[in-house]
Image (cartoon, rainbow, N blue to C red):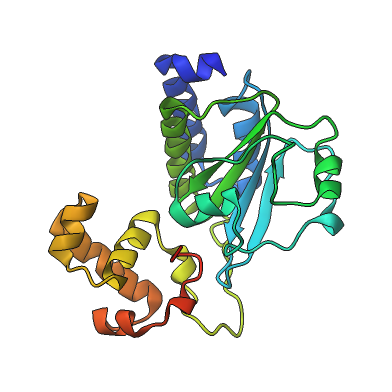
Length: 251
């Protein structure tokens, strides 16, 4: 990964190539992951990518993947965003998270891992695609999660997120039936989650702005978006909701 991590020109060219690819026309999630494999991570030790999308009932789907010779669907564990895994930490916080090597990877059963990775893997990293979920990337080698790599992956995730808004696969996050919580809570951005947690702790807008480093106008705008997404009228109604409505937000 040295070329990708230490040379800014290489990183910028890879980002530019991805942006150009996505700008030409709307792309499916499968074609986006194929481009990551063949271009964005070309020449590096990354060999597989899985997009994990958050459904509106809190479960996780895997609508796209690339780089795998087999795909043993019948062995896949049932996943949801409330489980305590490093992948879910990325999904909940919107951060880039190192998920470990083959030996330390704990979010799936051994049979599932052996079928997918007969030769193992050196490291894995989950990185966010805002509004959709996270991509879990697997590497042959042990890869250090440096600030440069973190910034690179966040930038790539943001570009993909913007592209998916106009993609034929824009609905990879599908509502679930018979929910007992606001169906859109799982589509909050990481910024909105942070503001939501502060509001639930009784913080005022000026206090939130100071603590999180945002402007008060931005906090007001994001708070209104939160109300709309949760289908509530205002702060009082938000404060009246029980914590059980947000199992993945309140850690």
